[in-house]
Length: 282
Image (tube, rainbow, N blue to C red):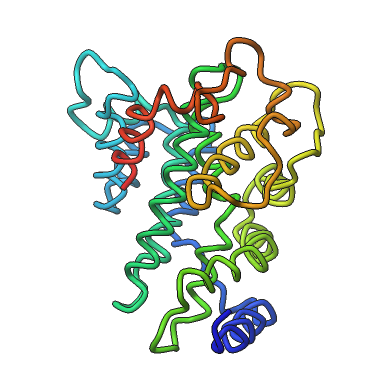
């Protein structure tokens, strides 16, 4: 552990105590979320609202045109995109875009740390989405957003270090994430007034043996993707074997099959699909 670790912990503690320092969602995000809940919203009204954010518009077009949706004809306009994705998915992608935009403005010293973290979170979240797509019963966009928000606290940590010239080392950052990510994530999502389900998922993420339901739920996909992501980074990580996870025991055959490395075949066999989804969200 580096000698600077105590300094970083103090900065994070200050962030926890001063909730006003936590990032707020852009007002446009709140407007889009509100519009999506309006019963009589028209595609034209929604298109006009989304088009105010060129970055979001481009992301939605890229996402809807990706191979993940296998459209016979690519979406030609933002209105086409909304029709292809559906209102709920537009809302979820809007939230994911907002999360990225809030933290992507980190200074040069933190840019690589953010990009590495964002790609890791996207890979984990895309893994959950691809599993949802093949298993059925859980909407892929819901699994993607739930997995992404389950570790949003790790991005919030970057806000604590903005005034420092030197970012923490990768090892120190991961230690800080393990210590503070969950609590910061809960505080942030409450401030953003997101659905309570996502807050509960943060609380249950990494709880390998808990099972609130005998049926496969979104939290199970989050934990399965997290388990694989941890072992991808550190094959010797001190976590229980995959087959002991409550989430694994809910998988129906043949989706519980393992590959030669002891990972889910469902995940290793669909790596290209996962990479395509990650690319569409970058």
